[in-house]
Amino acid sequence: MPEPVMFRRTSFDAFHPQPGQNGDLGEAPSFLLTSDDGTLVAEGVHEVIASSDVETLPEVLHQHFATKHGKAAETMVVGVLPFMRDAAPYLFSPNRVQHLKQTPHLGYTAKPTAHATGRCAIQEEPTREVYEDMVRRALVQMQASDALTKIVLSRTLRLHAEHRIDLRMVLRRLAEDPEASAFAVQIPAERSGLNHATEPVTLVGATPELLLEKTGRQFRSLPLAGSARRSSVPAQDHAAAEGLLRSEKDLREHSAVVDTMLERLAPFARNIQIDPEPILVSTATMWHLGTRLTGEVRTEAVSSVDLAVALHPTAAVCGNPREQAAAAIQELEPFGRGFFTGAVGWCNAAGDGRWMVTIRCAEIAGRDACLYAGAGIVAGSDPAAEAAETAAKFQTMLRALGIDEKGRIRDEAAA
Image 1 (tube, rainbow, N blue to C red):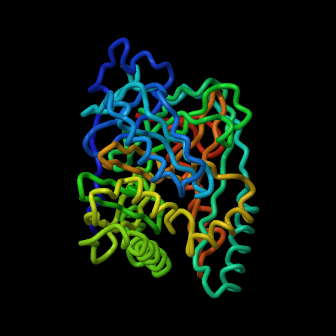
Image 2: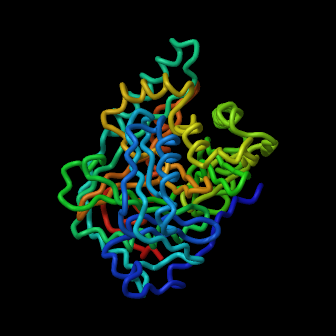
């Protein structure tokens, strides 16, 4: 069995913030993203980038950087792209930027306990039964269409906790998974699923999916599609991974995602190299099929945002074809995704940057949270199995909160 891809290994205990750095930021910094070479932490909002939609973002950023010749923070933007391409991104230039070789503990000097959040009241939106009906309706739509071959459908868990949710605790737990990139970004409440929140809303998660990273003229990507839940029993875990590698449905779904990404990269890139076969990518809770893509941009003028916008949203989180799948999602899902299945990351004036797909995430404000998870629906999908896949994907955030799917405190501490 192929070895899982390892993206980073860092420790919360290795960084001790000093006053005036991120030790006095309260619950969380304005932006945080871990990667295989450290953690980017941005503090404060110097200037919000005024872009009306994702489509026009590359030109807006080009004009923004053309006017900046001052501090380093002014020549970098950080933030998040929404799922819908006609919605506005939330990007900003920060007041201060730190690139840390280790992951900050955000004020924690001891490991968090499993009881910090307390019990939670959980409301499913939609319920499993309604979600399974959504899958059936999606299958009918695809069967009636000559072009529509995949629709990614998601659902949410809305939580109200016994105690105030400590974002530092959540981030620490998320960052302990070495195969995922932990992230946090404060977003406007009105742009979130917690749009009635009276406290700051933070989008937080641990995503295994690299949309795009560019350094100089080189770039890489790791699209994921096809998933299986991991087991704490080694033999069962091994069987789940082997089964995923042999799954005709998952391999077909994955191949379609890679094909669409190659098509969208073609106008910007050359010398693209891809894995001959999908590899296994693991997180603490899931197995995924992944394909590594590497290449170089055709001209130095192509930025990481140009590439990210061309790729986003991928067939892995939207469907295929993109426009038809997005329309079906808006019709079938009973909520707006906002920044879920968008992209979180950064770009500097040189065009370098890193963008991760915003999955395995939640929006958190005070004692409230909204968790998101989705599954790709293709011909042959089983509604009950797809609902079970979303339940498995919720585990990343439920474990970080120290609760199970019923909102009960987990017996074991999340070390």
